[in-house]
Length: 536
Image (cartoon, rainbow, N blue to C red; front, side, top):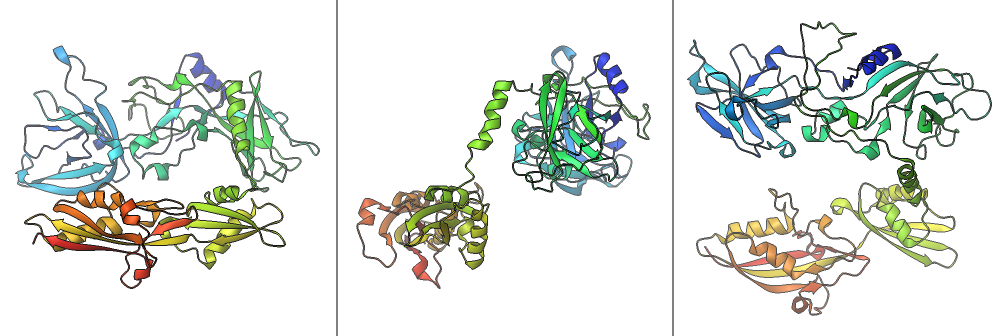
């Protein structure tokens, strides 16, 4: 909810020493969400341990929590007084984003004054938002020991102005348009996408990558209403893109640079712009908890008696502007990234920029009339380099291709494996269950709890990556119920044995990729066999 201020409004506030924050998204306030009791399932006192990612909230028969939903932010706050009856520990406050919500009842405890079971709501949040401290659940003679609070809205430092003016304010008919705006305090921040943030942990919403920050300024053509947006540079701007770059000019002024109809669009002669910008930067915005107290309700239907604010957590992330030496260093980095492929390795690096490519290798050969560059592509997930993908990759690399080079896109040279292990099960363990687990970690889903892929998942091997017998044996030995493992076969499929088992490694050449599909309908694409002994 950005409230646009005039220069006089801001001048008065800043002159009074105020630090101005604005909310980053709209929020429908719910009075009943100001304080939500944590539910202990009949226990008078219990502890929600550090690292917790779920808790149960107490509802009521009137549906106090009916409006609570996935994506909402909740603040957990401990109200236990400090030593000697002092204030609660302000560091025992933590914000999470709800990712799962379940409404149910406690059938064993009824609501006071009725025979209805107590309605409750169990909420969960992501591991990134895990509780960083133990939280007390229960109540004393004065209040509950801890509560949850809704009505949490993100805010960042800055004040939006809509009365700024470019000089010159009209685009000239000749020459480049390089207008100035007489401000050097424009806010820089990473653009905020509320719909995206609502699907991510709360921890990610309050951290920013300063290298992705953009100036808080937009331009609107006076007549057509078309918007122009700021960018860090125009190197990747399309020739019709309504984009510009902000450049510090010193002397409390900033200059705008537009495109030239090659990179970025050049504004048409005679255009005038309305300017909207935000001001406020640096460490001044890193205010402590409980500092924000005044609420500007201009432009809303709310009254001062209806709502009040506070910031339960300290603000963070505000950084001072870079000096000119830092600016030169980081500004030049973009130009050190090659945008033209000359060598075979260059083509391989460019191919790796494609989002569906795990790795790539290149070969440059003279084919009699011209130089041909063979780009071998290892696709993510082991997908096939088919006709359609070859065309897609050829178009992707075309912008980097050196004149005189002919591109040939190919898949990897796969090395299919042939492996057999004799596995002895411990007494009391079913051989069939053990074999299923062995296949699962080898070519199945892998270890889902830890997120590890199966050993021979295609993404685990790429060009020139050797396959070691110890990889398979050590992983198999970790499965409960395995007593011992004896390698029987370890070599390339369909080729003469060359001592790979004694060496405990299958050597993979730089342009080869190891593969083992274990498809019973296509054993020539690699197989792994477990010969089970012992057990039951």
